[in-house]
Amino acid sequence: MIYDKLFEKYKVNEKLILQNRVVMAPLTRCFADEDNVPTDLMADYYGKRSDAGLIIAEATLTSKLAQGYPNQPGIYNDAQISAWKKINKKVHENGAKIFSQIFHSGRISHETFHNQHPVAPSSIAYVGRVPRTELDYETPRALETKEVKELIEEFVQASINSVNAGFDGVEIHAANGYILDQFLHQETNFREDEFGGSVENRARIILEIIDGISNAIGKEKVGIRLSPHAYLHLGHTSGDEETFKYLLKEIEKRDISYVHTGTFDDHTKVDYLNGKVSEFIRANYKGTVIANGSYEASEGNQLLKDEKFDLFAIGRPFISNPDLITKLKTNAVLTQYDENMLGELV
Image 1: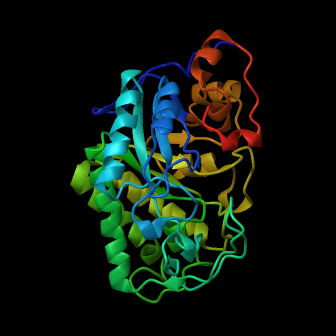
Image 2 (image 1 turned 180 degrees about the horizontal axis):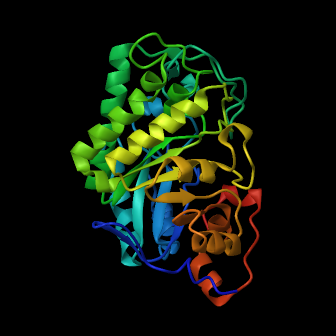
């Protein structure tokens, strides 16, 4: 198999040129220490995979209250910034670029992580169990308007901290049912202030975060991940698709680096999106699109040729194959991913 499009250089913008079109997708590994500080093992883990074009690091906390899983890394204090510097230095040695994925879990959390109730746009519980624990999710406390504005500032500060830690930019995690996605969907946003109600109001927090980060570190260092199909931790309500159409057009005006699809399987046709998630984003956004979601490398290569998207993100095969890029280039057999691999950093 010849993966000619996968290994082309790709110019996102004047300040972000990738050595190939392969993106290592963010993967929730939870190998930070108890203080949310990245470890030396993580430096080795990311370093081994740094022949990708772009690495998007695992979901990284904007504050202690942002935590939703055990042992997540943060980017809100000096110890964390210092630890990420080691990781980013190792990644850059092999030519990859790396973005921090700045994250807040919202209601997908539990007070055991931060000694206070989880927060969310509205006080609506998600029914389920916190992964890797025996904890059930709790009913969150609804953020006050001034707290929403403080949350925006936390994302902006996390972007500044990320650049200071050596990241090439940040990906705003607004997908997969976490706090920013909760603002976008009617099922989880019953607010009556400027951050709820209308399409424009539900999208407001995202656009204010993008504007704040762009002003702080430059628009060319900003990407975002979106899940317009509401496949995880929340459900679709008729009209949500209009929020995403509006949001994507507003993002396009801001000329950031990319929009990244947040989905488990992008083969799925979604009725209310009139096609696959990547197709919906492509139809409503003219900038760089990163697609992922259970594609084989050969499919990704062909879809790049067909200009269905611009960059191809790979997730689970990167866990089981630290040398994935080399294996693809040499047509070597890939080690199949197994859930048992989540317990160790290969």
